[in-house]
Length: 367
Image (cartoon, rainbow, N blue to C red; front, side, top):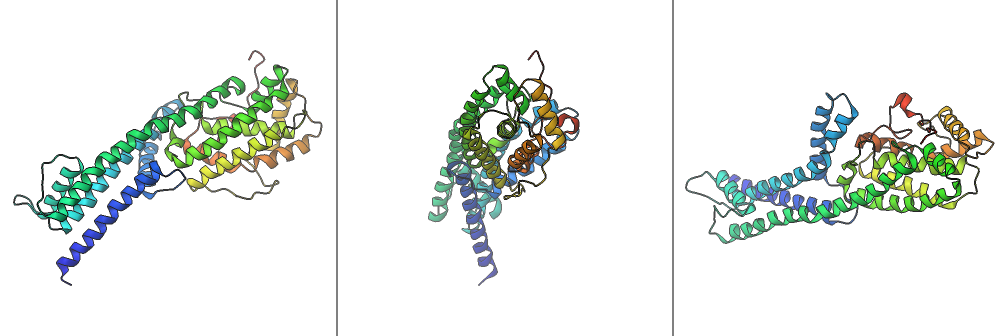
């Protein structure tokens, strides 16, 4: 086979594959209703994150870092569209070159690029006469508007899921403070003389965790959409609710509520599925006695705060610790990994490497 013909064949195959991979990326990202990691989407967000991390290194306060990271998710979506369009442009350029598109004023590569750009952006400034290239121009002219329409059409879906997520996150501040803490949540219900009514929260949050798993794996960019309030985060909210549910089961002397068990299970399954999507490491089958990031001393300090605020507690504190740690071990690693990945705000027991800030804040008597 002549070398020139072999080069054309290789260019055609590579170009067709680039176009196919790009369309598949768009389908996986916006149309496929399930978690489907895509290499193009991952590459775009990874490169963009490196640029953001480079800028963040010179920032001194969390508020500054949060303000910058607020642009990361939305900008990532726009850059993803740009990447798709560039790949389609290059893929079709290879196809046109392989089919021998020429121009009297340009070399073959530039002629192929001009026809590809004219078709993709429907400029109509470059035309071809042969049948095969003309059919390709029709298909490319359709792809550009379709990709843009996909982005525009799915923005309401993305922001609708974001708004629904944030509604309960914002409501948590009323019950658990800001940043949210498990101790604050339990104390507030005790002060209202309705500790048994805390079980109503577990129903809401079980449903919230179920939706979180679905939306934050099928629309992965949602993980990086930050709350309007810098102190709020879906990650730290998850940690506070799960810690509170586990603490109520393990240490608070009220009738057991099976809904708390279901909420914890829904929560750690959701966090694990999201961690799986981003390939974050954790032990999928931990033992109840495995070490966790919270120490027994920190747990005892939290119980002391609850006791001072009149929360009825079980007498066996060591058993309470073992029971609570047995729940926490199921979500400890995924929670901290997601907090680091999303650069979540500092919050008790939900943020890695917090030092003294890891302790639950003492609930103010005037709160």
